[in-house]
Length: 274
Image (cartoon, rainbow, N blue to C red):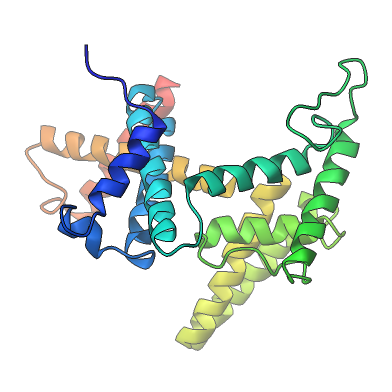
């Protein structure tokens, strides 16, 4: 039976990898910035495993993501800043503070009575008030100051919209958003007619931003919806390749009419299967 390692073992392994004389040259050469791309990639691989319901693979991907946290913590520890325990302590303290309905005395050991169940509206109101206080303590007084700029654009658009909606800066329902999409689409058409590349980019950005607003009003994640659309397109194109292959053709060899015909057949078959 393989040896069962613990979190302490992983932290020890990371320290060994960074030992100046006997560590790994690659790991020794890394900095906070050089591993950020890997962090983003590992996070997306976690999401991909979940999307595919591949929970055995998810265990591996979560380990890869955890290793990123351990790596950053090792770098900070070497610089005398903080270590992994400080990271764990900080997130625990923050979550205890943000859940007074679970930890009424503000300590991890405290417990509310099972009878006194708080209302969801109260929980949400307290959560937002605590987060606003935390932002103020960090010197981030603007409502949008702490929305990370490095987020994928679609996710950041949704977070910006959710944040301002909490102070009433929002459409009352999805009908207004649909009207705004029509308005933005007309402006895109005008921009395209002008052949001004910068103007076209601006107007397309406005249209995309408003589409994100519509998914939010429909209580759907824009990122999730777009990932699903990507997967649907990928599946359909694979079916198109198979359809053309049965005719002895590849997509490169097929005419525009043959591609369109195969695409429509694939869509009909897909609808029939449903």
